[in-house]
Length: 161
Ligand SMILES: Nc1nc2c(ncn2[C@@H]2O[C@H](COP(=O)(O)OP(=O)(O)OP(=O)(O)O)[C@@H](O)[C@H]2O)c(=O)[nH]1
Ligand SMILES: [Mg+2]
Image 1 (cartoon, protein in one colour):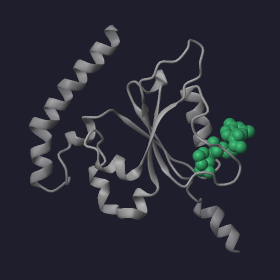
Image 2 (cartoon, protein in one colour; image 1 turned 45 degrees about the horizontal axis):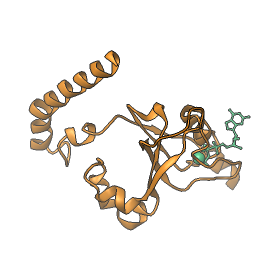
Image 3 (cartoon, helix red, strand yellow; image 1 turned 135 degrees about the vertical axis):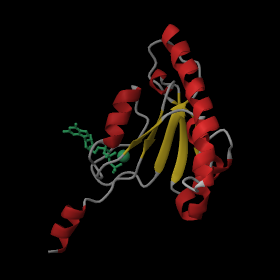
Image 4 (cartoon, helix red, strand yellow; image 1 turned 90 degrees about the horizontal axis):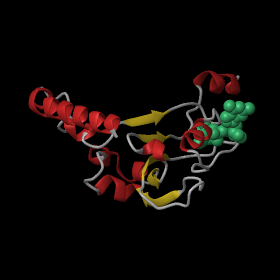
């Protein structure tokens, strides 16, 4: 409880400093299209990147303590999935589960989330963007974004030869 209060007051203090000192400079010199605090008002986000089948989703499932993301040997995922905390009662000992799922259009248009600036990428991106809320305690202070596997350029070059 003490730790959580400490983190929250630190976050509020940092947010105020960014809002007051950094954002005006960033906007004035067009370093950012949106006020910087828009990205940190929500919670810290961890983007998980890697080649396909490198174990991204397996690692995420392990951290969350449940089978939340699909895993498999072939390229499995073609989407960016924002995984965030969802409050839902569960019996003691139950594994965390998905409490709510939303598509990319919802996620880009809901002001609760900081993804407004991604709208410019249009339908092609929004159809590969989604939200999952999961009642895992691991997600109380951060959100994870699982990503589609990237193709390793060296592997690709070898394939063409
Ligand atoms: N031996 C071994 N296999 C693993 C490990 N981590 C994941 N795997 C297996 O590797 C395969 C791919 O894992 P995923 O977690 O689906 O990989 P991914 O990076 O999410 O793949 P994409 O979603 O396709 O990009 C699955 O069959 C996993 O069971 C590991 O640490 N060791
Ligand atoms: Mg995956």
